[in-house]
Image 1 (spheres, one colour):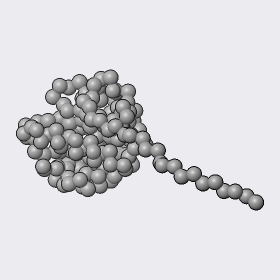
Image 2 (spheres, one colour; image 1 turned 90 degrees about the vertical axis):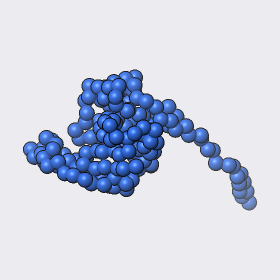
Image 3 (cartoon, helix red, strand yellow; image 1 turned 180 degrees about the vertical axis):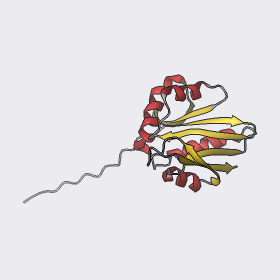
Image 4 (tube, helix red, strand yellow; image 1 turned 30 degrees about the horizontal axis):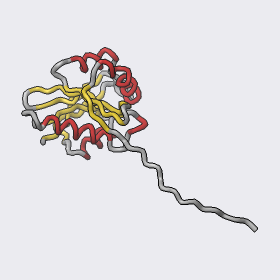
Length: 167
């Protein structure tokens, strides 16, 4: 004779703390790591630091339980802001974190006179283009041969697509 004992338990739910913070130079190592994960032509540590330290730029991180998962760097100009760089840690992509970070930025900008975001993306970066189109950006222009290093053909230049979101 065999006995089967069954014990029902409730699932363990860990609280998640999502926060948005202004980037500081103290965050540079996390930002460099994420940048190098996601780009074949990553910004250097110096370029990232200069953007963070530029007092006119808006630079934010998205963190979960104090771990930086992504960042966003924006340069405001009059009634427009240019997205310079946005990146999410590869382990946490396709989970809505990019959208959260973008929406946080838009809410912050709604308190200013800025009413549109502009960005430029490599023509070969279909994942990014799809992301931006999904969240309301439109393609408005093409910069022929804008990028010196082409991701697929290193000896050729690559086009840049200019996109805009009005809000």
